[in-house]
Image 1: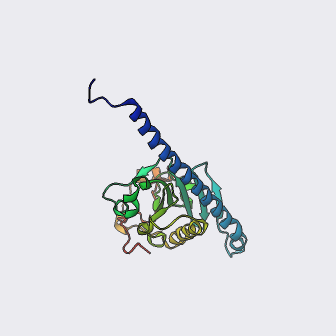
Image 2: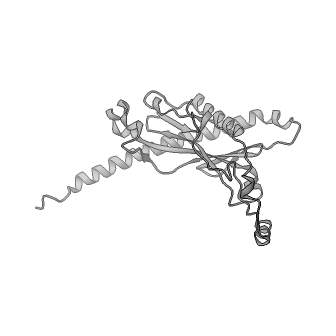
Image 3: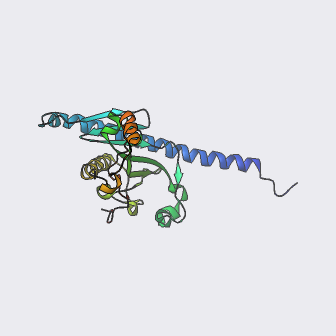
Length: 231
């Protein structure tokens, strides 16, 4: 018998073990994502009357986009929350992998991923496919509902608490509110004058025909990681 052949029974057991782990992480993340949906919809519903009484008409709504996406639309902005359907493990060099929490049980390093993107509302209103959106945060959730969140400024970077923090409704509300606050303070900047001072007639006509002028909050600027992003 060839000693290099893999034992089929061991192979099947390994397949079942890994698949079961990933399924458990997936369903835990889906459970958390449904809580994000519920809390986001509740936030909009409980504050909509106040917004509608404002001096100028203001966009403020929750919009479902299927099983793995939903939108929060407010003012000139849209936040898109999206759950990735795959399960990930962190690279060996990642800070999370160096914690005692992971060393004690490597399976804890497998996480689902919920991402938060910011777009301009006009990008969707006027169907501008070239406009830019920005990833402002992502939440990683393991099978024990431990999490860490990394992101920009108010969204924060909290991976150092991965071993001791579990997601609950209070945390989920805090992430939603922090994401909205960051978006409100993340303003649209005008591109440098010299980047726009020359345009051909053909380019202008093309832009008028297709609304192809690409817009984003940092268009014309090199978008770099913010300094001091952690809370």
